[in-house]
Image (cartoon, rainbow, N blue to C red; front, side):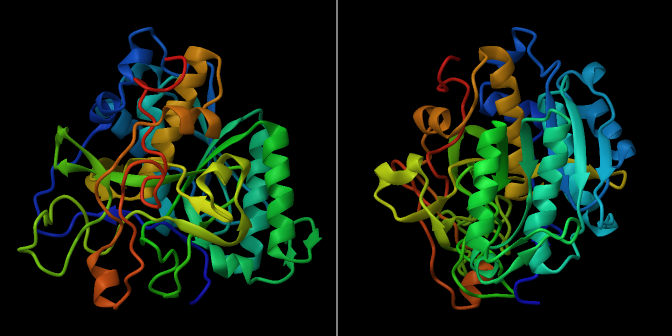
Length: 390
């Protein structure tokens, strides 16, 4: 239904298409994480939190890490807590698998904990439930959080009064709520890496065909993460481009059915109601723009319900960047915040964020990657070879 809360759905390979999916060691090479790993830095003593709709599968995670973790002997089972007034949704397990498996493979020494909220809650309950999960993470001393959930920014902005179903606390409107949430995140010194969405400029498509970015990626205090793909599948030397680019014409230049999905592309755009943060004022914008940065969105190998499958999504990008931030913090003693990312991201200048499903619906608000900030990949990708202090 329009405005319904949804996770960024797990993106699976099109049946019959032989898709070469990357693995954690490929991602480590892509972003030069050997600069950390060569020094024995694998996230030991660090913690990463995740906001999810489903409790994790220790069996899926253990199987994945045994095959693909960069140091499987360091991995420990993720902990999890079901938040009050919430229930775990088995249908969302694939999302939880993806988030924990990649963060845990890239930073195997880190302790992982999932905070599960109710994905079936009414739209106006989603923001306070998510904040409740962040409060629980902060109480556990967690300062790096990955979030691959979202709803349309304009839909959230139009909610009217917001009430926390757990505490009964109320806010007169979404802007007041979001302002308080931003202030709280900053006061905690928390780094929240949030998926920017998988539907180009239409975060709630197909339920809602309005142009809109994805919330909570549009929160000023979070780091919104978009998606990239390789220009040539499995060829890192070909370079990264914005995740998208399917066309209605298979004979068009650059068409490659094995390199993306016709029903998905990286999200991005401006908030309908939240102002630009200080870090974006030099861009000359009025409203909060997303994404801030991007990372590889697929295809990636995951283990879901015991089966190895290829997937796509900015759901993959957010935990990858959360893992990089964890390693960066351990290695440098610095925080991989907006300032560090904007200063040190490796620019992505090609690609776009459209896809077949949007074109077939007659929707055309597409962005194209270019030099500097853009609505496909933000400032670029967090390559350890270019980040401050690395």
